[in-house]
Amino acid sequence: QVQLVESGGGLVQAGGSLRLSCAVSGSIFSINAVDWYRQPPGKQRELVAALTSGGRSSYADSVKGRFTISRDNAKNTVYLQMNSLKPEDTAVYYCNALLIVFGGAPRGYWGQGTQVTVSS
Image (cartoon, rainbow, N blue to C red; front, side, top):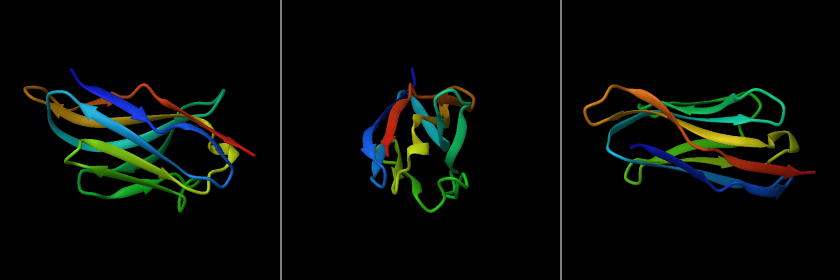
């Protein structure tokens, strides 16, 4: 059974930083693309950052230059470093991984989400 567990959320003042982690566990053959999404209160979920298996990253315009997505393959963990946080970054943050389990086909998995609240 595959699990994605996010951590690192919390309450921070505007201008501060947080680092989110997403630990992937289970009978995993390979982790391909990984993404971070967020869902602000009352709004739809949106893509924040993406990282391909080849190491290419991309970001939403709203976070470019402030957020950095990375992964540690040895730990099966994905990170989102968030700097210069703004109140509009307040949301539940979710990681999503496209991965292959042993004997299975590629599919996407979601974590349960972690709350990030930025106070002004």
